[in-house]
Length: 407
Ligand SMILES: Nc1nc2c(c(=O)[nH]1)N[C@H]1C(S)=C(S)[C@@H](COP(=O)(O)O)O[C@H]1N2
Ligand SMILES: [Mo]
Image (cartoon, rainbow, N blue to C red; front, top):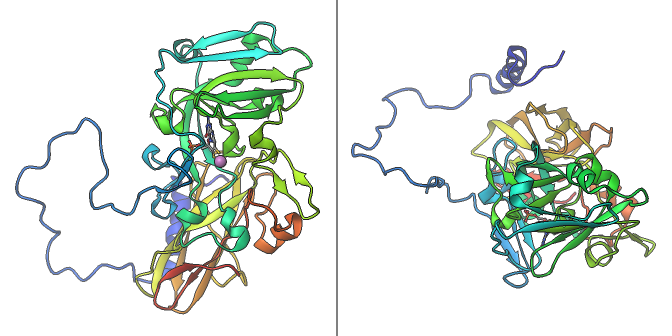
C-alpha cells in the first residue's frame, strides 16, 4: 500500500506518533482572551511584485566572495519549509559575475560532430515541447569544510550550496536529434556566455537521457543569477556542469578536459591520484531543525526536520538519531517525492532536556546509504575539497542551544 501525505491512514499514523510523544503537551496557554486584534486602519496597497514579511529577517542568502564577481551565496536551509527554494534564496555561484543578457539577442549554437550545425533563438527554443521537473542543484563544493570539521556554525554555511527548484525547459535530446549527432560522438561541451565563458564536458548518454535546457524556474523566467535566459540542467550532476547563460554546445569524441574538470572539481585521492568526473552526486541529508545557531524553546515535544537528496534517484529512507548514532528511527518522508529533488523528512521528538547529538542518514533508490564521516574518509582520504556527503551531527546543549559538532 502506498501511503502519501494526503492519505487518511498516513495522517492518522503521523498523528499517533505525535500524540505518543506529546501526550497533551502541544503548547498553547489556557484560553483567557480571544485572538490578537488586527490593525484597525487600512493595510498597505497592492505591490507589483511580492516581498517577504519584514518580520522574516533571518531568511537571507549569505555570501562569500574572493572578488565581487568571483562569488557564491548560500541558501538559508535552516529557515526552509517543504522542498522548494524560492528563487530569491537560491544559492549562487559565479565565476565572473552575472551577465546582463537580452533574450532577443541571445543565441544557442549546436555544432561539432553533428550533421547540421544549428543556431537557436530563445523564441525558437520556447516554441518547442517543454517539460517541468522538480530538481535539486548542489555545488560539489557544498559542505567542503566538513572534511576538516570546519563546516561553519549552521546549516546555511555547511550545506547551503544546495537548493531545489521546479525547472521548465526543453529536453536537450530534442535539439540534439534536430542537429543529428554523428555516430562516434560521445561527449559534449557546454559553454556559458559569461565573461569567463565557463565550460564543462558532459557524457552524450546523460545529455540524451534527462538534461534540460531550462528557461523558467519556480513559475517565472529564470533569474539572471541562475542563468537567464537559458541554462543547462543536468539532473543529479554536480552544479558546475549546469552551465548558466548557455550559448554553445559542441559534440566531440571525448571530454574537452577544460579547467573546471581537470584542475577544479576533481578529487585528489589518498594515493595522490586525482579522480576526474565525479559527476553524479551521492545521497546526502541534513537536519535543518534543530540545527546550528537555532535553539529549542525547552524540554518537551519538537519536530526534527530536514532535507535529503540523491543524484541517483529517489530518497527511499531517512533515519534520524537523537543519541549520537546509538539508535536510529525512520523519519516520515513528505510526499510526493521526486527523483533527484530535495525530500523533506520529519520526525516527532520528545526532548528530555539533556545534551543530545542529532544525526540523519539517507538511503536512496539505488540502495546507497549516506556514509559516516569516517567511512567517507576511509574511502576517499582527506585531500578532498569537493563531493562531501557525510552524515551531519548537530549538538543540542541542555540550555537548548544547537551547535555544529563533528563526532
Ligand atoms: N556560465 C556559468 N555557469 C555556471 C557557473 C558560472 O560561473 N558560469 N557556475 C557553476 C557552478 S560552480 C555552480 S555550483 C552552479 C550554480 O548555479 P546557481 O548559481 O544557479 O546556484 O552553476 C554553474 N554554472
Ligand atoms: Mo559549484
